[in-house]
Amino acid sequence: MALLVAAGAGWGVYAFTQSVGSTASSTGGTSEGGTGKDDTEHDGKNADGTVPSGLLGTWSAQVGGEGTSTRQLVVRQGEVGESVLTLTAEGPLDTGGSYRCVFQADLESASSSEESVRVGASRITEGEPLTSCSPGKPTILTLLPDGSLRREIASSGESLTYTKTG
Image 1 (cartoon, rainbow, N blue to C red):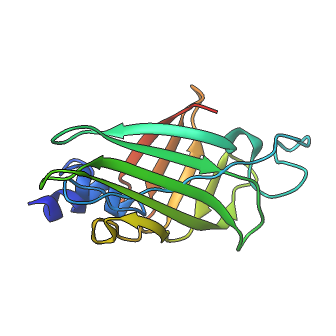
Image 2 (image 1 turned 90 degrees about the vertical axis):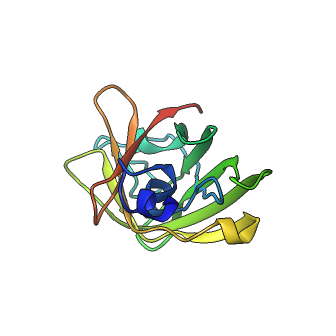
């Protein structure tokens, strides 16, 4: 059942986090994050990279289910091919205890007309227990008009909205 939930954003937390580039469920979790500078040029991008400055920093979100699971996303400055995203996912396991998964993903492209970037599939850098973590699919990060960040799975359109925390 958790697998079906992972297949769609409306199906469940497990599926959503897995599809978003990291997997989290009552039996597992995922995470990614990053940090960046804030020296912005006129085009809204950092002078040292391609990522729009509005996306840089630390972002947090929660996903439901049996207990609350948290996601912390860190976006840092970088060029295409460099690691710009770290995601950390934490939450309760169905079997008791908890999981913690950390993921990283590289920048694939940045939009010159929007506050958005595309990052590649995430890779696991830490996992406790490791069996609770699965690498994720490519995602699109977009700065929304209200200042929040949307992380959307490129292939399915599933998304999670994050609030800036740092």
